[in-house]
Image 1 (cartoon, rainbow, N blue to C red):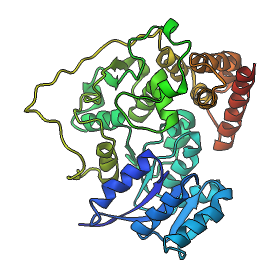
Image 2: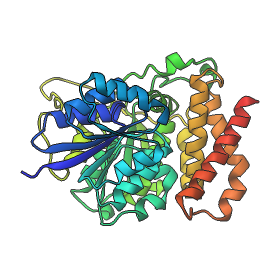
Image 3: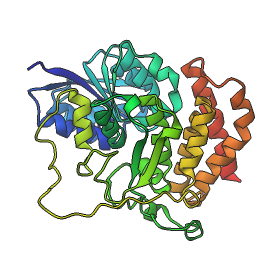
Length: 382
């Protein structure tokens, strides 16, 4: 069986560490040739480099180079080459590996995604912001058909389901949501929610930004946009339903374990064994599905509006939301202010966004994101 070379982007984060766990169980199938991370967890990055015999690592934060070199020296890996800065991460992504797993959080993951596609790599994509913010820029970077393997659990499930039929046979795509820690709450109950409460997700173990997005259901709004663009299905044919047990991922049943979609993203079209325990069909279980409360959780409706408006709207949605989430985590913005701030930024910028709805370049997208972040910061500071 042929060995695939793999680059992991965001190797010290939730997706990256689970991806490396999958690879560690199938070392006959995968050879890790590069690791990239932000630079906040240099000791872990050094340990990963030693464990997987990697000759190069890249870090986004240039200020972390000395700390990473010390960590590599202590781990007995002083020979490992360090590349630093945003361009180094992009270069790592575009180095030509068979598979690039992009587990970076945020729209900074777009340019590495584009670099991986342009280099001919199969892109195992967990960075949903690449699709949401980048729009057609991401898909235009493909050098062949079906070059993107979705890694989000819901999109992996839709991807698997659609492989057994055609788009024309499907009237609706159903994206499931756990409902987060505040499922069943009314809007008036949410005024004093703290970051500590919002970070206590009932089902999934994720990074802080994704966890907050899951609590507001903005994550699900971004996933509606992602599903529409990945599978070329209009938003009117995509439904969201609340499924607290997180077992059914768009009608593919599996435990809530991200290693399963990550494994398929790395190995598709083949499936790997020895990844995670399957559902136990010998035990009785009850799975429930509930309608989404749009009044308490308006993020999905807002995302649908942006998807129907333009790709520039979705980029602004994503950028403003990232600023608002960080402000909430730093206790500078109340919980309900997250989505309210995003909506206010979109309202302010709506007219100018509609003038020319498509991006001409990544640079244009980055400038629009900067403006959206600036406006979000102005509203937050007020």
